[in-house]
Image 1: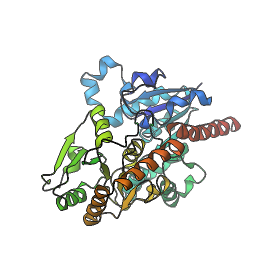
Image 2: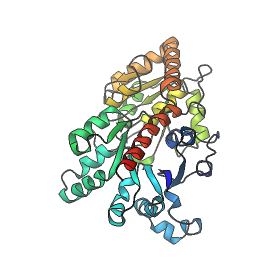
Image 3: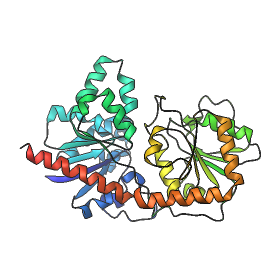
Length: 364
C-alpha cells in the first residue's frame, strides 16, 4: 500500500500533485505542510475535490450535477490504496468506509467540527451517524487547544485520538514589509464566522479612514448599509490580495465570539497567519484560539467582540503610533518564522502520522 494521501477541499494544483510546491503563484498555508512530508520520511500524494471525475466529465452535465458532498463521496474509491488519508472533508465518505471496509486509517483535520456537532446535537439519527463516523477516525487534528477541549467535552469517546497542531504560515510567499504602507485599514475573509456588521459600525465612527474589505457576498447579508469610507472587493485575485497585505497600514480580523454556531471553529485563523507573515499589524476580535498563536499586545491587538467603539479606539491608536505598528509587525513576523512555519506544522503532523502507522502495524 502507498503511505499517505492528502485530500484538499478544492481543485488540486498540478504543482502539488507533482510535489513541486515551491512556487510563487499562491500561498501554501492551506496545503498543511504537504511539501515537507517526503523529506520527513513519509511519502505523500495529494488529490482534490475536482479529481473525483475525469476532466472530460468534470465540466459536463455530470460534473455540474454532482455537488461538493457527492464529489467527496466519489473520492473514497481513490483513497483505498493508502495507509493514511488526511483531510478536512473525510466525514463525507466515512460511511462508505464502513460499508466497503479497507485497511486505510483516517486522520481528520478539524476545521468546523464544533459547528457540525452543535448543528446535529438535537437530531438523534444524524448525531448517531456523526459519532459513528468520528469513531472511525484514527486521529483528529485540531488547530487550537480550545477545539480539543470542546470536542472532549462533547465527545469523550475521542479521548486519546485528538491532537493539536498549530497552523503554519507561508513565510516564503509572504514577505515582511515595514515601510511604504498607506493609511488603509484592511479586513479579509469570507468565512461565515466574520462579523462585518461591527466593523462597519467602527468605520462609521472613523469617517476619515479608508477601509478595504475583501469578503464574500454572503458576508453582507442582513447588513442594511455600508459606510461610504468602506470599499468592498469580491473574488480578489491572490496577487492583488497579497498587494493589499503588503500596503495596508493595519488589518482588522472581526469575528463573532466563541458561542457563535456558524463558520469555522477558528474563524480568521488563516488570515491571521498570512498577515503575521507579512509583518502587518493585526487587530483581532478576542477568541480562545488566539491564545495559541499570539500574545495579546505583543504580536496582535485584541478587542472584545461586538464592541465597535473599542475597535475604533484601537484602530485610531495604531494610526497615531507608528512605533507600535512597527513593533507589532516585527514581533508577528518573528513569531511566524520561529514557531508558526509550514515546516513546524509538517513536523508536528508527521509525528501523528507515524503514530497512526505504528498503531496500525501493532494491531495486525
